[in-house]
Length: 196
Image (cartoon, rainbow, N blue to C red):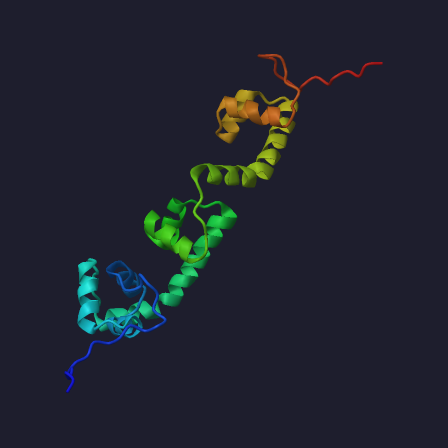
C-alpha cells in the first residue's frame, strides 16, 4: 500500500521557463503588479515558498489595497513612459529632463524609457542630437547678426544685445560668412569691389 500525501506540493507547469522562480525573478513580477496568488499559479510553487522567496529577495510586501491601486495605475504608467520616450527620442531630452517631467528620478526615468521600448543614449550621442536640432535656429541667428553687423553694429554691441560672449558672436558671424571690418572700425561694412 502506497504512502498517501495529505497536502501534496503543486507541480511546476510544463510551460514554466528556467529562472522564472528565482527570488529575484519573483520579486520583479511582484513589483510589476502580480500577487502572491498569481505567482503560485504561474510558478507551481507553494504559497509559503513564494512568500519566503519574496522576503528573501528583500521585497516590500503590499496590502491588497495597494495592489489594486498599482494595477489601476498601470495604464497611467504606460502613458507616462510613452510621453517620456517621445521627449527623449524626438526632442533630445536627457534623463535629468525626464525626471523633472514626471519620472521623479534619473533611475526611474531610465526604467520607464526602457519599458516604453526606448534605448538610453550616451552623453556624446545626446550632444550630437541637440547640436543637429539647434542648427537651423543657430544659422538663423547668425544671419540676423550678420545683417546688424553689416549695418554698423559692433561685436561688443551685439554681444550685449544677445547676452552672448564676444567669442560666441565672432563664431556666429563667421558661421554666416560675414566680411569682418578692421579692428576698432565702426560703421557699415565696406562693400567688396569687383575686379574688372
